Structures are given as C-alpha cells and as structure tokens.
Image 1: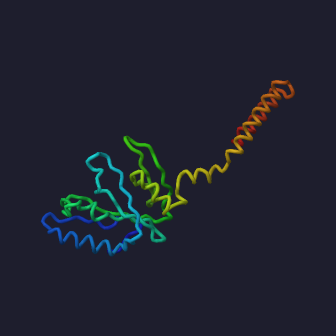
Image 2: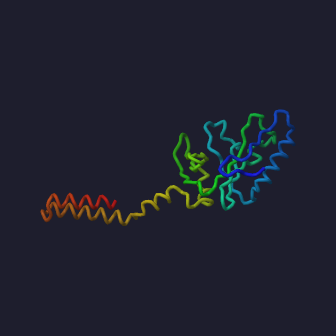
Image 3: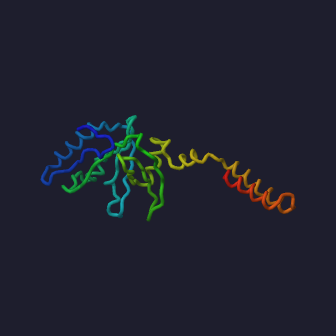
Length: 197
C-alpha cells in the first residue's frame, strides 16, 4: 500500500454489496498507511455544479518534506449518515512531489474564485482545481510556489523604480518641449526608458 510519486493515491472503491464496516475498515487502513498527520489542513476540490459542492470534496492536505499530499476526509466520503458511497464513486488522493510543483494561483471562475495547483508529471503539465480557501492552506504549506511571488521574483522592479522612470519621461517631454533636445534624442532616450520598465 505504498504511495507512488506523482500519481493518485490508491483508489478507495467500495464494493456494491460490501457492508459499511468493511468500507470504513479499508478507509482507516489507508488513512494509517498514508500517515495523515493530526496537523493536516483541510482543502476542498473545486466542483462544477452546486450538487457536487458539498462536503464530499474535502481532503486533508499536508507535506511530508518531499511531497504535497491530499487524502479524503471520512465525513466527506460518507456524509453525516456514515453511509459509504455507491460502488461507482471515484475516491482518491494525491502525492505530488514538491519539486514538480510549478505554482498555485487564484483564478476567477463562474460563479466563484478557485485555486489552481499546477505541477509537472513526466512530459505534461497538470492542474488540480481547488476551492478558493486552498490559497490560505498553500500559502502556509507552499509559500515559495505562490504565483504572485514568482512574478515579483521574475520582475523585481519596485514601484519606486516605476515612479522614477515615469518622472524621467515627464522630464524628457519637458526638455523636448523646450527645444533643449532634438526629436531623435527624445526618441532614443524614450526607447531606453521603455526597456527599463
């Protein structure tokens, strides 16, 4: 019952006529096998319809030092009635190596915002969509994978630099307007300033 890197965790598929106690025992064994820590946070997978947006999508979320893991919450699987889902219920978690995670970002969807976790799997890039509250969880577990911080690292120019460049543009226009520089000098300097932005 080990976990394969970069693959869904073992499926929990209840048998059509299995008694609820058997399904619970299987869930508990997998829960122990995957070592879900008491400190695990809760995230919800994103959903496409109001009917599927209940508690059935809640997952524990944690890191083990090398991977981000998600495992379904028991109450989310069976509901308050503690009745296992139908036999065709697809239930699994994820183990995503931290080194394969590209970033996470909040995006506006209809009707709500959602969070996309983007990661590499072999030769392709995959996305895992979660509810908006996952951003808070990922900020704690994956602070260096926040897309907005990645942008700041890629484009470190501060707002002060932009203000300085804007002031240079204003000064440059004044010099041209007063005839102190030629049109060619203005165009060359303007081009230099645009490169700095």
